[in-house]
Length: 75
Image (tube, rainbow, N blue to C red; front, side, top):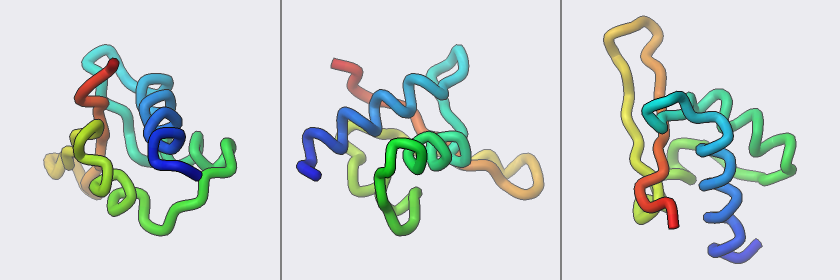
């Protein structure tokens, strides 16, 4: 899969699963990508390799911590 195609799928996935502030739970993102048959090793590592379009954050105020992603540049 080409990088541009993968980035479009990542954007679509995050936007489809995002809350009102634009953040999507990585668990939901992973489930959505698996349904689209996108293979990846560790989701957070894959998303970090696309930091030009994705911002990541971890909410460690809850246990266990929850990771979220947001599209940076929705063009």
